[in-house]
Length: 88
Image (tube, one colour):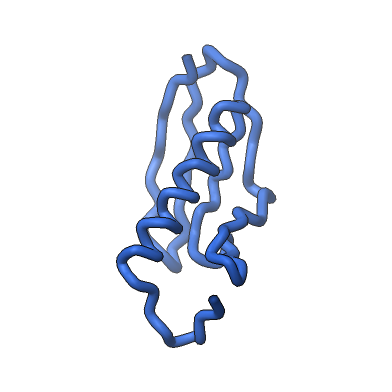
């Protein structure tokens, strides 16, 4: 199903897209990969409502047991902030 540039997705379609995005991020995190640049421009939706996560230019591999701290955010979208998480 092709969406026009200004056409809205239904609630059902949005739920499906978000579920796919959560699954994609869960898979990346299970492989110790942090994408670090999730935004609308980096999510491609195909004609069958399947998503592709693109642009891994800011992604990084993180070793298990490592405490990670880095700045995130772009002023175009929101004020940057610091994030810390610990991979188990």
